[in-house]
Image (cartoon, rainbow, N blue to C red; front, side):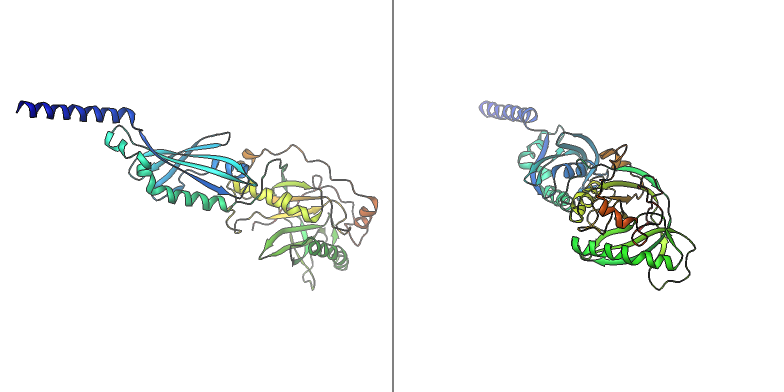
Length: 365
């Protein structure tokens, strides 16, 4: 019996040693790491992850409580589990071709229980929820525009509404179709305005130049002064956009305005989470003012693009600070500027730059 007792005592000692070793040597967190490939550039993806709001559910029973740090290419946040457990989520974003790669690490603290620490092997309690968390993050990032907002320059301004005479139209998204529509507008609208006693008070405007169902749809016309007509056979009257706007300058051909301006601003708004890239229902109203002759071959070479703010723009300005001013419009050749000065194609009074005139702002969508 004494021998048996000694054996049992040895086994007990070994178990105690094993448990003690497990407490000190086994990890006190369970973790799982997965990689996500995204077609959007790394700066856009990183900013979107950094702006994830508290309360976002990563998976059933796993909720982000706050983003605690953003440093370099890494975003770290704390998470809460349904069983009162806590942990962290860490995103490391690196460029991958024209897109990016996100290394996502999800952790859960296991406390001092040595038995629980044994479950950390292979991911433990994190493994069942990791797949759903990856799917949530992938779905959110996949909706981002394939554009970067780095180097984007804009100013914030307040603009007042003005009476607006316009025609509505849609065309395909080719540069040729858009410039053709704009050219027709400059030829057709001024005579109609004259016959109704309306005088243009600013340059030609295109309000909400957005792509809708594969069509580029907008209201094109002029702000005006004069008695508003009661009825119109051709055209409509309304108000130009108003309120807080982000104004950007674009000097280039029609074909470049979408990738160089609209896609980049959309990436900024999406990264700041003031616009949901997965839907067009909350798109910001936009408009353009042409600083030169829009009827020249290839269309305008200098225009101002406006985004009318929806609510608080602090998340945007925190991400990319506004400039103090934009550069002057690109100079145009005299021959190109001449048509815009004629009564048929331009306002009867000299057009000031958008920064000098009350700038329109669209009605809230």
